[in-house]
Length: 306
Image (cartoon, rainbow, N blue to C red; front, top):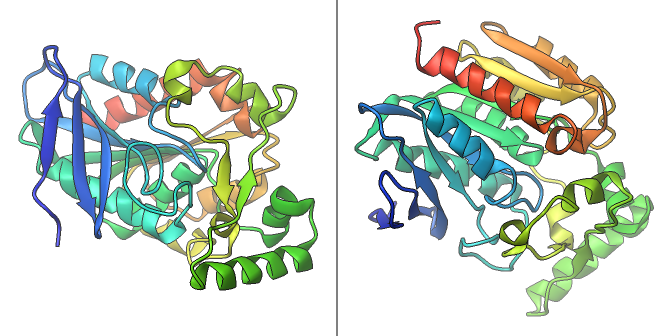
């Protein structure tokens, strides 16, 4: 059962407002922005990717959407940022999708919001979560996903954790699970942020706001296989809701080929844009273009009859 919604207003007309809501027993916190416009208005729910926070990329997009007359709700997943949950910095893959659905419920209860015009925007793992939530929840009217993983790879997880030794990765997961069951502390995997790497090129753009709640590690269990690893069977259920995919041509993390297969599996209104570069290029080189494309898609399908 969801708890009563509570909000705190940040000084300044029309928000933003700090908000919190229950997500299956965990308090999730975020920021609600409602534009100064005739209400009710549409709203886009926003969340980031693997270990990502609501302060990353999202504030800029929220301002752009607000200027277009669209409200936004950005949130931190359970165990991350301002949200509750332990162990900290653990990616609960199925739980994160439930956080999206709880955010949708919260959005439908905001008095200024038109509950028939709720949309989702997610990037990287958040893109996968947004697509899955849209497929499962027909309260969603429109979805935009940037560089989403479609099918999880144990080999890629092992590469991140230990350089690619799958058997050692499996053994480490089993040992960590046993130790945690006995009351031990979770094992953490450091996330490298060398500016010379693809990921580090994004990290290098961070200011104090982005770094405020960021800890550069994730629990080992964040990389364990889960029921959310393969969303390809869910993709056809997105239709007839309008879907925009924003991809890169050389996404080694989230397989451009798999993304294209997923795109083809969806009927109905959809659009695809592919930018040159690696997974993180949409956060750096092509950031303005990708955000602009998302705003245009939302405006077309939430503010007009198209």
